[in-house]
Amino acid sequence: MIIAIFNPSSNVGKTSLVYHLAWMFRDLGLEVIAADFDPQAQLSATFLNEDELEERWLIEPNRVFKGIFPEPYEIEEQLSLLCGTMSLFGFEDELSKAWYEHSDEMIAAFWNGLQAQKADIVLMDLGSNLGAINRAALISADYVIVPLIPDLLSVQGLKQFGAIRQKWRSDWQARYKINPNLPKGEMQALGYVIFEQPILLYLGTNNYSKWLMQISKVYHQAIKAEETRLSLKEDPQCLTIFKSYHSVIRIAEEARKPIFHLKPADGAMGAYGEIIPSAYRQYQQLALNLAKGAGLADALGEIYFK
Image (cartoon, rainbow, N blue to C red; front, side, top):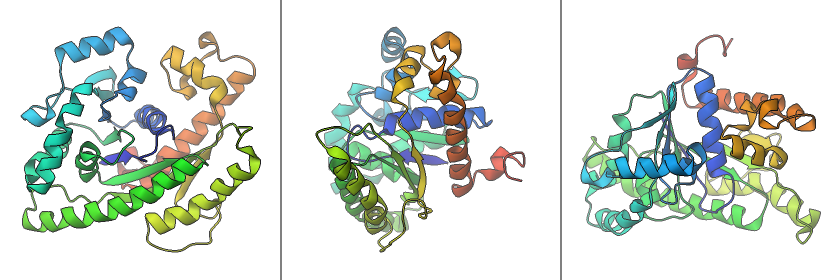
């Protein structure tokens, strides 16, 4: 199962969501691969320190489009990382040409490589753009989750992604009919996740509320091609609304742990420590809902789905 976490806008929580879900699915007993297909390699830098990342780049340069997929790097038992690398930037033009020249096997390189991995779930982190690399990666995805924050750029990114996703799906599925050995390119919508943000004084509460209230409507128009008047609480496509965990994010980054794995020894004491159980429950419930929506309930077993 391949799930892409994507919004073409930056700073909406894509990398953080992939990182935390990867750890949570691993905690739930699944074999997980976190695939970093962002050339800026932010996900890889979250998992690995600078020395470890440099070593991976020296040992295993990204060779996806030379027919050799990079080996996953084991972070911990049942959790592996496909490292990102800036060398991916060099394939942008090649992938763009391949699309218009109908070199579909090249476009399917991500999918072919991911299919060869032994994992229950692959979570993809992508860059903040609608370029050829992201198109090739998204074509390989079974499902897509859209992270959002309540601001103009995030919501506009959702609108743009909705329009381009429809076009990419239509174009690719016409190719799939001719060659069923290609990925289906379904990119089914699993829903959206909202990350609350500290309200910036120069934006004010009115703008924050304005964009928060528009998310459900815009998502259904852009992604589901339908109208809705559902509130966020009523909308089944709203997977969760994360509170602002900014107070412990820095601690987690320094410890190189997900928020919900922090211990007092990491500095998560007092009020910080009280956040940890809440974060664990919220990420666990999100992971279980995603597993159910993506058909992974059987892999988790009856203990979680009674």
